[in-house]
Each structure stands twice: as structure tokens, then as C-alpha cells.
Image 1 (tube, rainbow, N blue to C red):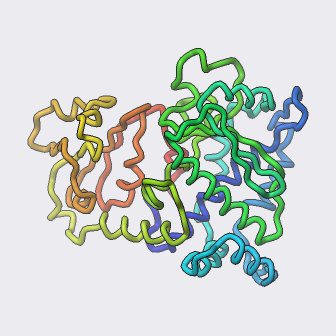
Image 2: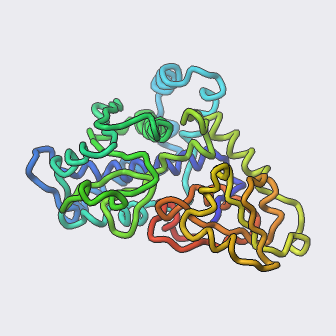
Image 3: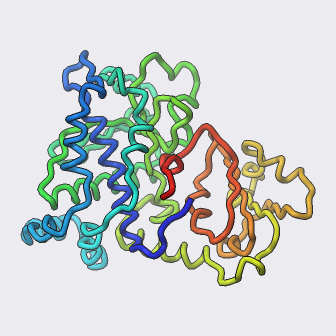
Length: 351
């Protein structure tokens, strides 16, 4: 897995926005009235039309047709700092080398034949979940039993959706009203107590999707790497600067022959109570004694990870770990622990 490091970092922001709109487009295929369902198979032409009008990278001609007053109005209304105002045109011009259609449809395949109803979404009110609506191009957020735990992820999620809406608005595109339900913990729709599960559930937006459960993986935790970890705040400046800092810390100029010929793993920052070393099957790494393994309980500088020829990605809670987002930048070989629970981008095919 890799990112194109020679491209502008803002292109990834554009790619994330693209994924968001793909999800939103599929979600809005649901009928408005309460009891009806809308099979996605019968809406292929509509989905194709939506993709043509919403997802495609703007052409040069489209960029030239953008009215300056529209751009100025968006810039002045939503971006208060000069560094973000300057980066906003770059985001509009950004493009994505991948097609995310297959990834989005993989996330939404549960409802390909059945569709989903308002009732199936409303059932999530029994969980610690958050309802996010886009009405008339304006985001509205409400909650049921949500606590401050995971609030940073909602802040990040709303920012990504807002960037998508602004990009669509700048090109005169209309995103129909849509409603989605999100949960902020590390689990998916199925990794909860049985009393919170029911037949034929609607989509629940979460960090991960486990197997074929009723989850839709969403990049709500990207503030950990590209924003403010403590608050969840995101900005175009923070995204670009954090991207560049991660590139610098993850790279080493040592040739392969001079890298340390061992397989490295560190339990990370949450080692105070030694809990991180016991999650999943991580304990096997610590119990295995081999000269080719370098396993550390204490935190280890990320800037030194790339000095090793091999890195281990071992998941923690709920069968996944955000660490892969950082390891993917490393000029090294990553050994991934297999899991049924993954974030959306792990299913894209490399080109």
C-alpha cells in the first residue's frame, strides 16, 4: 500500500472528499417516505448520473467557468485564516488517481437489493450515536446518547463533509438532502452487545467495516495524523503541514542494504498500563524470543521506524489499528496482521 508522495498533499484531501460524496450519493438513494425501500439495482442509471455530476474531477473548462464571486464568497465565508484561503483553490484543482467507485460499492453492498428505510436508521437512537444531516447544503448534527468520548472524530468527520459540500458548491453542483448515523468508538455495527443488534439494519458510519456487517467505513479519525489529535480540529493548513511532517519523519536516506535487518514493532503511546501490548494477539510478539524480532513495550520515535527493513502492523481493539496510516508512508516492508475489520482504503487495488 502506498501514497503518491510526489503529489500535492491536498490531493489526498480531495480524494477523501470524493469518498465522502460517493457514500452520500448512495445513501441518498433511499426513498423519503418512511416505509418504502429503494433497491439500488433499480437505480443504476441514477447512480451513474450522480457520479457524472458529483464525483468527476473538474476539467480545465469547468475551472475556467467558475465565477469569481462564488469563489470569493465561499472563501470569505468559510475560511478565516489566510493560509487556508490560499490553499482552498489548490483543493478545487486537486484530482485523484484512483477510482473509489468499487470501494464505495463494497461498503454499501449490503443494501444493493433491499435498500434501507428511515425506520432502520432511527433504530440507532438506542446506541451512542450521532445523526448528521445535510439539508439544503447545510450540515446539521444531533445526538442521542452521545458522550464527549469520540467527540474529536465527529469534529473531523463534519469538517471532511464540509469540504466536500464547499467543493460541490463552487462548481454549481447540488447535493440532495441526506441523513446518516455515525458512531465514534473503535467498533463497527456488529461489535456490540446483542441487544443493540436487529434484523435488516440500515448503514452505520464507523471507522471500520467488519466482514459484511451493516457498517460503512468512514475517515472520521484522520485528525490523528493530519489534524489536531486533542480536539479533532482540521484545516487545510494542518492537513498539508502534518502530511509533510509525516513524510519527513518516515523517510530515511539509508539504502536497503544498510537498514536494520529485523522485524520491528512498538506498542505505542498507550503503554502506561501495558494494555496496548495485550490487545488482540500482540502478546505473541512479546512472548516470542527471536533475534530477528525487535519488539518494544515503550514508545519509539516514529522517525526511526523506517530504519528497519520490516515493520509489523498488529491490530488492537476491534481488529484494527490506525497505525497503518503512518506505516504506509515508510520506505520499508510492512507485515500486516490479517483482520476481518478494516478501514475503507485497505480494499482499494493498487495501480
